[in-house]
Image 1 (cartoon, rainbow, N blue to C red):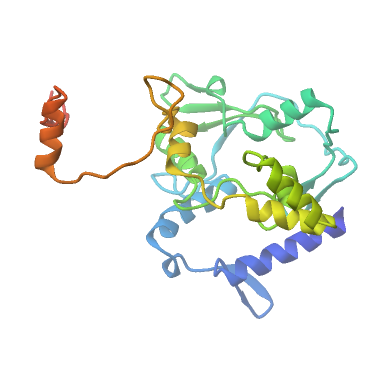
Image 2: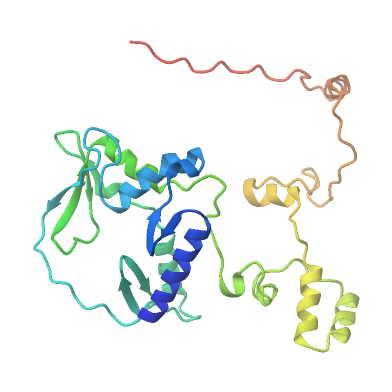
Length: 284
């Protein structure tokens, strides 16, 4: 596991260097200057750097460490379990395995992966108006709570916000976008007609041919109507009156006089609703 983690660290450092996040000079590695990136990076990088070092980024206590409360006895470092490794702040955990039929454990693993960054039940204000964050598991030195001002707490939350246009879900293995076996494990569209299926079966003499047939039959994009149905549960493909008829786009009318004439004929108000006024700030 240590050898695998060292390989991952080396590849990660090379990737960060290629992307300009790290700079190598005379055998040493440094963080790149924030001015070399965009405005988003210049804003988030100090917050993220302070968060990983448990320090304050801005405010009266900038550069100082976060206050901690020790409500438990310090404990000695325990040996890592098998299939786990720690090197220079990098950790690799491969000790959790779930068999294909263990649906309950799979659900627990999915809940653990998709859980939020912190729980509301562990955040509270003390008598001084400071934010106290209770740790789920005490640290080795006995720390059980982190104490921050509201501004410092907001800085820690801002460091967790992903940058815009950043993919939050990445698939690997057979679920990777270009994996050859992906069409065989992900749900496909409706089956092809029987005649086409028979022809495809006769033509495909090997598994590779079958895989190419599935890839060609699968559409590359989802229509906007299906996206509306999937996201907002708005069915734009079937008639709301009979429920079975399939709707088709006949024309797209953009001229305002024509739209008003059609709405008037249908007994609908041709004028759009008035725009609401912006909420005015309350003044004491």
